[in-house]
Amino acid sequence: MPALILDITLGLVICAVALGAVLARDLLASIVFFIVYGAMLSIAWVRLGSVDVALAEAAIGAGLTGILLIGAAARLKSTERPSAPSPLVGEGRGGGGRWATHSTRLHLALIIPAVACAGLAAVLLFVLHGLLHETAGLAPLVEGNLAASGVSNPVTAVLLNFRGYDTLLETIVLVIALVAVWSVTPDRFWGGAPGLRQHARPDGVLAHFGRLLPAVGILVGIHLLWAGSHAPGGAFQAGTVFAAVWLLVAMAGLADAPAVSDRRLRLAIAGGPLVFLLVAAAGAVAGTFLGFPNLYAYYMIVTVEVALTVSIAATLAMLVLGPPRRAP
Amino acid sequence: MTAVAIFGICAATLIGIGAFGLVTRAHLLRRIVAFNVLGSGVFLMLGALGNRDPARRRRPRAAGLRHHRHRRGARSDGARGRPDRPAVRGDRPGDIAGRDEADGPDRE
Image (cartoon, rainbow over all chains, first blue to last red; front, side, top):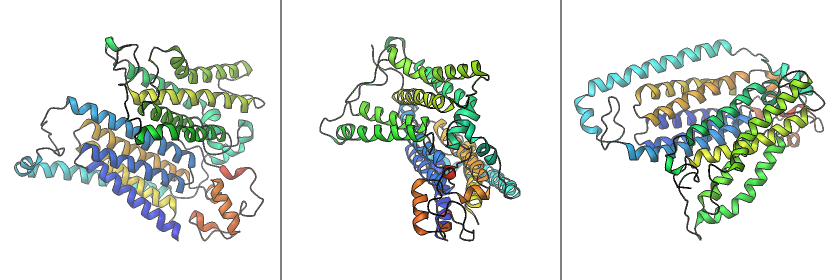
């Protein structure tokens, strides 16, 4: 019973926070709602028994996306016109007069989508109700083949062995995203370090935490990486924690990020997908592309996970720091 | 009502909220936020549906939870929200080998 009350409360809080993220008048408030939403959602994933998803949601959904959105909002602010007329809802600025003059149109413009979206949710609920019969899904298939995968954590087995293609393409997408971010660098800054030079008061909170937390973060990251083969954890979670450590050190002004032309940085970023491809090719020699022979599967997966962790950490940190804004 | 049903309803609501935001918001970032809400709603719905297997639900996932269950003995299913379930494998102290971290093929 207490668990039921917790689940219902959690569900209500998640929906309320999501409403806040969508309806908040201020952009920054909307982003803050969204970060809280991610944190609440990760608790829901724990309640559903998917600790791996919860870790990913907390780290990437709430943390990283939140930082990226705040950064984007700060940059968009400088490009915005002072009073951009919005055809629909006033985004918190100069809305009073418009609400009075166009109230009928405005109401229709809100009521019709609201009804349509409520209908969509109702249809989904109807479909969901039809699907609620108990079924094992693909879980028995995964567990039946777990012994052949080389690891005992089913999530890692699926991600790196059974559905290795998905993960391989996912890591390549990350690298492409970073290439896209770097490609908007003005010519005069190309080859410089990403972002602006960070300054923090040497005796301030940020500088203090920048020295204190990395030790803990590195330990947690190594644990997550190592635990991935038999418990919740893995390359994405560990990589995000390492990226957070790196960002903290960079934002506290303790160590500057390397220049985007730095060969070691580029090797670290491309290393994950490269090692994955090499290991996949080694599998091709043994029989199937991306197929891991049972005997070596564990070592192959750990090799890929370590390379992916380094790659993901570097890519995510560079994504947040943004394109170079300083001359080399 | 099980956790699957609760979070299924929650997911459908989130998809509705996200779709509403996507249609009615003009600002680019507001649309991205709304789309993320929609996407995570879809993901949550799939996650809830992936949790329908009763055998999967019975297994404790995290080590801490497992420890907790063992301390409380066989009648500890309340931790997973199903007080009506019979005692199952994994509830006996010492029977922790192997399959506790079963977590399904669902992840981003």
